[in-house]
Every structure is written in C-alpha cells, then in structure tokens.
Image 1 (cartoon, rainbow, N blue to C red):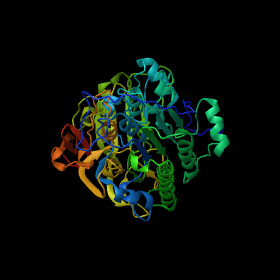
Image 2: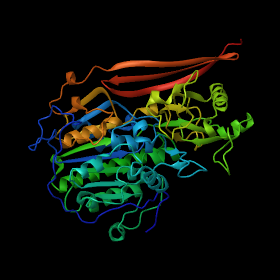
Image 3: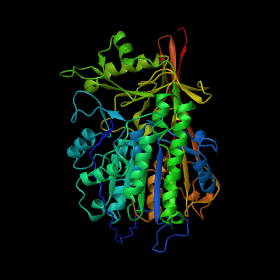
Image 4: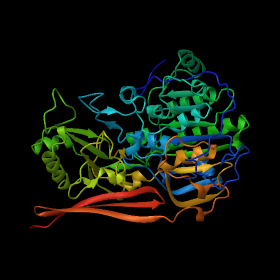
Amino acid sequence: MKRSLFCSVVFCCAAWVFRAGPVIGGEGTTPTPGSGGKDGRAGVAEHIVVIVCDGLRPDSVTEKNMPVLYKLSREGVTFAHSHSVYPSSTEVNGAALATGVFPAVSGIAANREYRPAINPRRAIPTESREATRGGDRLTGGKYLGAATIAETVQAAGFPTAVAGTKNVVVLHDRSEKRDSRAASQSCVIAAGEALPSEMDAAIVKAQGAFPPIAFPNTAQDVWTTKSLIQFGWKGTVPKFSLLWLSDPDFSQHHTAPGSEEALAALKGSDENIGAVLAALDSKGVREKTDLVVVSDHGFSTLVDPPDLTEELLKAGFNAGVDLLGPAKPGRILVVGLGGSTAFYVVDHDRAVTARLVEFLQRAKYSGAILTREKMDGTFPLDELRMNTAHAPDVLMSFTWNAAPNAFGVPGLLLGGTGNNTGRGMHASLSRFDLHNTLIAAGPDFKRGWVDEFPAGNIDVAPTVLSLLGIAPADSPQGRVLVEALTGGVESDVPKPERETVKASCQLRSASWSQYLDLVRVGQTVYFEEANGALTETGK
C-alpha cells in the first residue's frame, strides 16, 4: 500500500461488535437544557459525527462555494464568533478539539516542538510516531495531559471511529495497547494507513491504494471519507466518529485563499460532507445524529517572509534550525511554525533571551511577542494558556493586516515561514487565523439559528461529551454550548466580558507596544487577535 508523507502506524479493527455501555454522570458533567435522552443523557442523538475541514475560513462557507455545508448551516446552528486556540495551527487545535483544554494542559503548544529527551538535536512534529510514542514512554502514557473524546467514550464502554487524511487524528486515539473491549473494537485510520494488516488489505482491495498528495487534495480526502463510511461504520455507526479532511488547508498553502485551486478544494470538502450525510441517510440514522463541522484554524496570505535564521546570524546571534553536537550555552534553536516562530535558547540564558526580544521588537515583521519569563514589552506564555514544559523561551507571531490578497480575500501576514510570498499560511495571532468555522446540526441543536456568543474549538469536547451523557475524565477548560441546544436560552450563558491586554517598553530611540484582545464567557477565554508595532521616537 502506497504511503503518504504523513503516514503513521495506528490501530484499526475490521469488525464492529457493539454492546450496551454505562452512561456516566456525576461531577464534571455539565447539564444542558435539551429534552435529554431516555437514558438520562443530556442529548437525544444516538450518534455524534465531528467533521474537521482543515483550514476552512468562515467566510468561505457560502451557497456558491459549499452548497451542502451552507444548507446544513441553515438547518442548524452557525457559530458566528468561533475561535481557534493559539498557535492557530493543526496539531495544537487538534489537541484542543480532542480534549477541551488549552495547550498548557494538553501539552501540545506547537506543530513542531523541541523535546530534547526524545530528539536532542532538532524540533519534531508533535503528531509523529517519534513524538507520541516517545512522549507516552517518558510520561507513562500521558503524552497528552487530558483524555480525549475517543478515549473517554471508550472508557464508558462504547467503540469509536476516527479517520483522517492527516496524521493529527493520531492525537485523538493513539494507544496501541487496546486493553478494553471498546478500545479493541474502535477504529483509527490515519494518513492512508490502518492496522491490522487485513484491514489495510481490505481497504486497498475496495478502493485502491492511498493516492499521492495533489492540489486540490480531493482524492486523498475521498479515500479517507470512504474508509470511514465503509469500514469505520461497517455494520453500524458508533456513538462518536471523527473525520478530518486535509482540504482546503493543503490547497490554500499551495496557492492562497480565494484561488481557483482553493475554491476547488472547498468544493471537494463539501462533497465529502455530502457523502457522510448520504451514508447516514442510507443507514437510517440521519435523524438520530448530531453533526458538528469545524475547522482547526482560519487562514491568511504571506507577504515577504524573512529568513529569520539568516537575520539572526547577521545580527551576531548563534542561531540555527538544529543543534549540531553538544549544545553551546546561548545557542538559539529557530523553529518555524508558519505564522509564528519559536525560539529555544540553550540553558534559558536570560541575557541572550533579552537581546533576542529586543531584536524582534525592532524588526518590521514582528507582531506580538510572548516569553517564558516575563520581560518588558512581551506577554508571558501563561497569558495565552500555553506555558508547557516544552514551550520555547520566546514565541513571536508575525504582524498582520486586513488588506486583501490577489484574489480579494482579506488577511495578510507580513512575514512567516515555510512558503513564498502570495501563498496561504496560518498559526499567527491574526484575527483571520484565530477565527474558525463552527456549524452544528441535528436533533440536539436549534434549527436555523445564528449563535452570537463567543465559542471555539475548546468547547467541542465538553459539548460532545455532555450530549452523550459521559462525564469528562479531566476538567475541561471549554464550555458546553448550551445556548445553541434545543431548549437552551441565552440567559443560561454568562454575559461575555471583553478585555484588551497591553504590553510596552522603551528602547533606544524607539518604543514598542503590543495588544491582545480577548473575551471571557464565565471561566472560558477566547483570543480574538493580537498585534504589535514599533514607533521611532528619535530620542
């Protein structure tokens, strides 16, 4: 079977054998105002399907671009103010969608992180086998700091089905032990690969090998969707399913939002959503299923991305993208994250870190700057709930504006890594990256309603588990979206409170300032945007 660049060995079981499982309540379960199931669950749906359209901007969901999803949004709830967590990238938000907690708790603070106990030389992809297996080995199975939806549903006695064109789905259900009956009956298909080998062979026999990456990446997404429907749903649809599509993300990176290629990618994703709905209809469970369509992040367009490593070297820093040989004190490991860049300083040398921060504050491409330790003119990583054990010493989000790209789509990043000028990128604190798509429809959701309350990826896990009547194993930091549920009223939700956090400092002949807009709903916080600017004072 031909493998993609994102392949990982994961587990899948060919047969589904369901049995009645316990409904777990008690502390941690947030009740909803819906009519509830016969067994005391908060929701009435017997199945919940989450579809992630990677990189789908909310303004892309139009009747012309995505008629199936547009119609679904009119039949259910559109969350008008949905948010990613920062960094607004796939693995970080994949973990947030799976667990309902921020990076500081999940432990996933970037798509690529420096974890010297696993790889002492360079940063590693956080969804890779190297990271997940190494992380679980070092932490006794706690690579993620909170249980995922799939793990929690399996612990309640119910099998699950997870399929993704990208390897990020491994974060949702990564265990290879499969100790419980429900776990052994659960299915995971990631980036074209499924185990055991007989499942792999069965999928290939049915629909051919996993196709190569293309733009748009419709063929791989179709392959993954069919795998979920034909094999993950063999016999019956489980209580919880996840489908992760690679487009429009892949195509928007290859070109830009609004391009002909990107529009074709939207069409492909929409057709896959239609295939899921048709499969639910054919199995007679459409009216018993809640469908949540979400994107992990939004998207911007790059303008003049700098070579940060080269610029640091010219400024006299000892910097590079890896650590060759013994790490020398003060060496800076530069890790590009797209719309942000992470900087790891060997031995956390404060003098080098302070000099690095001032260098970034003077750079024309810098937006907001975050630091492990509080420094003048920066935000501490704690402010954005991402101060993990493996967080960098300095994290910089590139500056941005609302100007349109060549295709008329607003949102430019004035810097970035990994792509050329004019191509799509994300992972910054731009509002165009932080605002994502969230649409839900089914028996537990209001019909034809626009939810004006702040919401986000952090809320998906607690809402799904609440509807299933299963208490989260860990305390979620998101909220149950009660106002969007059948019977829910807006007075059930605390009034949103908006806040602007600022940081500034005086430099020689200049001043630096940055801001962070956020909004709170009760104990849940959503990040709206952040940016910074240098002002020459001449003094």
